[in-house]
Amino acid sequence: MTKENLNLPSREETQASVQIFKAFGNETRYKILYLLFEKQLTVNEISEAIAMTQSAVSHQLKILRQTGLVSSKRDGQHMYYSLADRHIIMIFKQVKEHISED
Image (cartoon, rainbow, N blue to C red; front, side):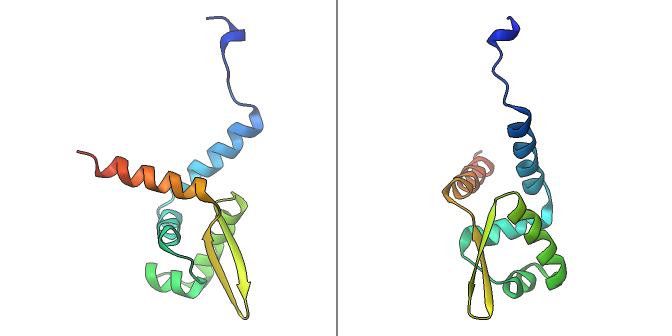
């Protein structure tokens, strides 16, 4: 196979993909993503669900927002977090299907 036949992603695409997999590879961030797969939540609701401080959850949410996995919207005094788009939802559905296979 010659070098011309190889179709590797660009350096930028590779780095972005690795960051997404790193986000999924962290247990705390995975728990947060799993909760947000179910519905949008506030930092307080997430911290209660996973028994972590709001500060720690906020730090993880910042990372998830930077990778484009999570988005947020303000409603009055509350900030609600959700999965960023349908692609993230599809990834979660596929992972759930994969781990439930025999």
